[in-house]
Image (cartoon, rainbow, N blue to C red; front, top):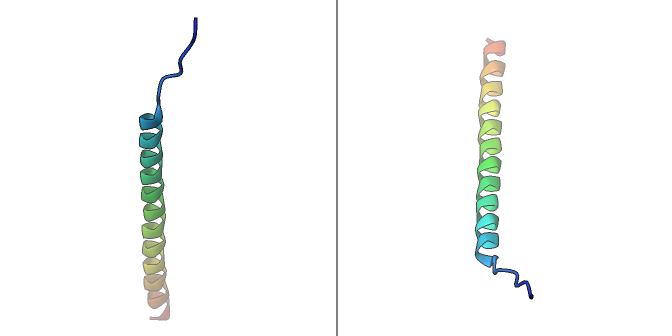
Length: 50
């Protein structure tokens, strides 16, 4: 009895696309948090000067 491995190429491609999308969302989130933190620091420094 021969065992034939099913073709899973479509699932692999889908997993790569989903993983890449999640990575992009994570990087975008980190970038947005960094920008907001920079703005907060600018406001804090401006308030400290006054």
